[in-house]
Image (cartoon, rainbow, N blue to C red; front, top):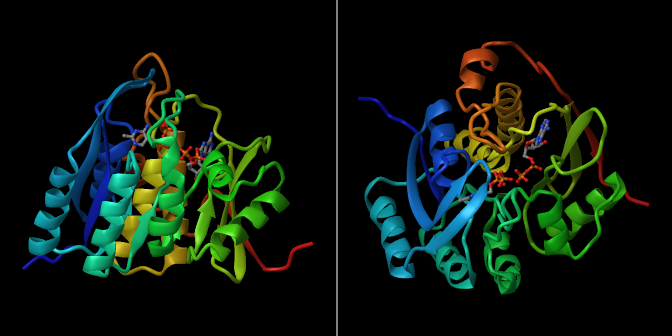
Length: 286
Ligand SMILES: Nc1ncnc2c1ncn2[C@@H]1O[C@H](COP(=O)(O)OP(=O)(O)O)[C@@H](O)[C@H]1O
Ligand SMILES: Cc1ncc(COP(=O)(O)OP(=O)(O)O)c(N)n1
């Protein structure tokens, strides 16, 4: 008998295949776990942007989650594009009902081309209902600014924002650095209430970064589903996304997707901390 770790992604569909449900399922497959999906909204999307957003009826969303949870079982869950307050509340209720422990919340708000994937008045529900249920939240810098109300320019600002998340009841947070202006590197900052972990990796000079955030969060989810500790899961996810961006795909006329198979082909069998620098600092702030 084969046993396999199982993960559920609750997110939007990206018809272009680079982000959303499609990126999550590809990541789950590459990291060797069984992936399931509950679709919150369908987007007509490609490398140039989002051409349409079509939310799924809340009853249909509820049934998708119930169907897989009651039968197949779930070791970890990831949330991505949730579209609005109704769907945030519904998903939060499901997480509480099933008492899921490994919950990765990627608070998706805006797609790369600028299209809104979350209605503006939903942030309060995100903060009050969903984020406190997260094992880890994975905002990019604009999302961390919207949630904390803080301008994030420096690393000190980022540390304060990470602490804001913790003070809001979020158990831990990775503030991703893809939108920042460090010249040669990107630094993702992980905070668990005690320790800041910096994951500093070479910045890759490419426009083909569509779906990086979704793929990073789903890689963390896959590793948690296998029973790995959170800090190991984050480090593996960082390696996974690094290789996916290094080997990203120049397809379409805009921002091409990352290569989900790259970690398995090029990264996985190399030993140790191959590319980036990872270091820690215990919490103390000016
Ligand atoms: N040009 C790049 N080079 C290397 N890593 C990148 C690059 N762009 C994004 N990343 C990494 O991809 C992940 C997603 O980051 P980010 O782009 O901030 O999120 P999002 O896709 O949600 O906006 C992070 O680990 C970030 O450091
Ligand atoms: C359906 C859907 N969900 C999420 C996103 C955002 O994906 P992300 O990984 O943050 O990548 P970019 O939009 O920055 O390329 C999306 N676009 N579509």
